[in-house]
Image 1 (tube, rainbow, N blue to C red):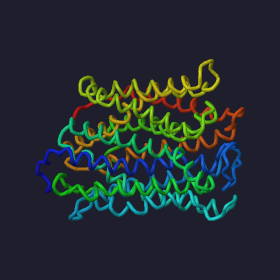
Image 2 (image 1 turned 60 degrees about the vertical axis):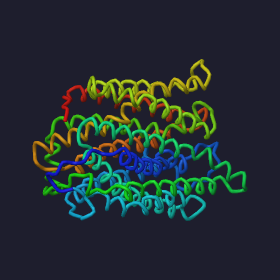
Image 3 (image 1 turned 30 degrees about the vertical axis):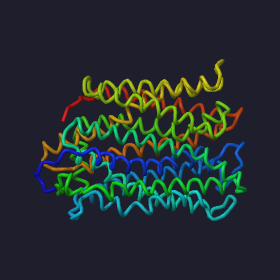
Image 4 (image 1 turned 120 degrees about the vertical axis):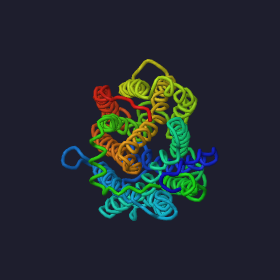
Length: 448
C-alpha cells in the first residue's frame, strides 16, 4: 500500500494468520528459555551427562551464563540494525515479510542444533559449539521477530485494533510457551521406545522445532503486506532513529519499566523447572501442568484486560500487574517450606503470576504501538521497526541479565536440600520489579 493511502480494516483471518507466526516463534524461543540452562546445567537427580564445565568462572559466573549473556547481547545489538534495514526497505513485497521469510529456516534449525553438541562428555568443543549455535540462533531470531512486531501497528488502523491484535498474539505466545514446556511430557514416550534420555530430549525438541517452523511460515505465505500495510520507508539511519526515540520521555520511561518485566518473565521461564522439581518435589512433567494452568488463567483474563484497558487505561493495569509479579517472586523463595500441600503452593503461585502475565501478555505491545503511532504523526517518519527494536532490545537485555543472574545464583545451590540459589532468584527479580514501579510512576499515558 502506498504512503498516504488509508490502511484497510484488518479481517479476522489476517489477525489469526499473523498471530500464528507468534505461536511459531514462541515455541522456538520457549524451547531455549525453558530447557537450555536445565539441559546444560541439570540438577544432580537428572540423568544428563555434563556436556560443558559447570564450575564458577571469575568466582561467580558460569560458562552457560556467560554464553547466554553473550547471545542476548548480540541479539540486542543486531536488533536496531535489522529493524532499521527493515524500516528503510523498499522491497516490492513489503518492508517486513521478506525478512521473516529468510529467517525462518535457520531460526528453526538452530533451535535444535543448540542441543546437539558434537561430543558426549564435557569438552571445550562443546563450549564452542554452544556459543556459535546460540549466537547464530539469536541473529535469526531477531531477523524474524523484529520485523514481525513492526507489523503490529502497521496492520492496525486504530488503538482498539492494535489492542485487539496484541490480545491475539498474547494468546498464541502463551500457547507456544505451554507447548515448549510440555516437551518433558513427550520425551518419556521415546525413552519407553528404547532411546536414552538425551536422545529422547533431542527428538522431542526436533519435532517441536519442526512444528514451530511450519507456523512461522503462515504469516509469510498468507499476508499480503502491500494490501494491508501503509508502506512508508523512513529515511533516518539507525543512530538518528535511536536518538529520536530516546528523546521521547514516555517511551524511555516505559522501556525501563519493561526491562524489569523482561527479567521477571525470564526468571519464570528458566526457573519454573527448578521451582517445580527441586522446591516442590514434582517430576519434570509437572512443569507442563503448572505452565498450562498459568496460561489458562491468563487466557481467561485476556477479555477482561482488553475491556478494562479501554476504560481505565493501560498504565494502572501494568502497575498492578507488576505488583502481583513482585509478590509471586517473593513467594517463590518459600516454596516447599510452607505447611501447605505442594499442589496448593503451586496453585497460589499460578494465581499470582497468571494475573500478572495476563496484563503483560497484551498491553506492552499495544503501548509501544500507540507510542509509535503518536510519534509517526508528530514527526512524519514511520519508525515502527525501530520502536519495536528498542522495545525488544530492552526485553533481551532483561533476559540477558536474568539468565546471567539465574545461572550464577545456581552456584549457591540448585539441588534438593541445597537450594539457596534457586530461592534467591525470586528475591532478586522482586527487588528489580519494585525499583521499576518507582520509575514507571512518572510515565504519562497518551492515547493514539
